[in-house]
Amino acid sequence: MTEPVGRLGSVSLDCDDPRALAAFWATMLGGEITVDTDAFCAVALDGLLLVTVRVPDHRPPQWPDGLPKQFHLDVAVTDLDEAERRALAAGATSAADQPGPDRWRVLLDPAGHPFCVTTLIAA
Image (cartoon, rainbow, N blue to C red; front, side, top):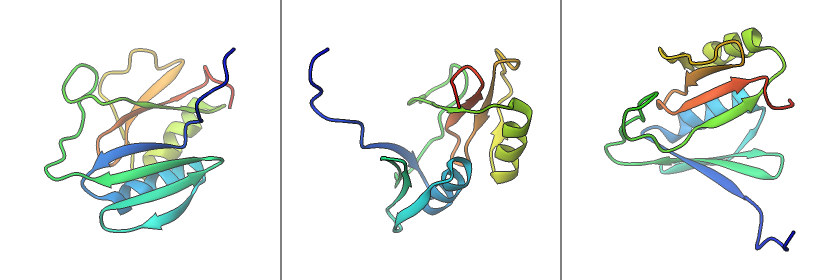
């Protein structure tokens, strides 16, 4: 293995309301909002920042095959039903297309970004 150039420091999500999206992800992942502005917010998570960035005319990505799909996050959990319930209570919505609901649930964050809660990754 070669020496890495660096480490992943942050992941940024485009949106129209950085504060609302940061609050959602802080609730979902147990992070702390460390930067809070109209233009962007940052959620600190065990050595990683999840950054929410205001983008003019933001268009939510479409699931599963629409555009613009940027990427999605996978959240490792031990109980799919409980994780889905808590995500929905925090402001997520369930995606209509669920290709593997016994292994992962596709949800959409408040800005429309798809993410999965899954038991396929050790929580």
